[in-house]
Image (spheres, rainbow, N blue to C red):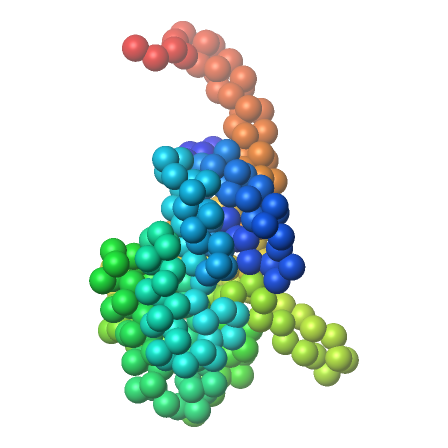
Length: 264
């Protein structure tokens, strides 16, 4: 296999954000995250305390969304929401940027909004992922093309102290001319652009649309270090199936070459 199980599992932020998610479903999601040893759960603010209790000692981190899903909370509200999440035990914060302000060209507001969350989170030892919602940015804005707009956001995030830039919320549905709502989420083009637009100290997170193992591997190949996912069990079970299928062939080749397969 191209990557180890741990390398791929520790990319996953197991997403527990559906609007109708019950307490029982959230708790089962935490158990799945622990079973598969992913990087974190990404949950709603009210659930942070319970998730911290469930995941204590497992090695799985607790992350919390802020200003979710549309990013339109007041700057002061986002700061307070961040403080509360960190006090409750969250060690990663996924904030949604204010796209209305960005599309208006009010870059100073956008920068201050992101910086407020970063300062609050970092004061508590937490890290910050800034969500762009790229499905809303296909036409660009504020006099910039789509690509240049996203580059500008990346630059602002880095200066504001963000630890990650993130493609999507997973809920950025766009109404088409036919009245139907569609959604792409993370795309190869956006991941490549975002990786190239930040220095190495800022990581990239994919979210939305990554539903199978091949998608997760593709995201890693493009330089993303985290991936929001709900199909965690399916992806990592598939990894184990493939690894088990290739192991006998590898062992047979080693024996044919007169090599041992055991450890020291």
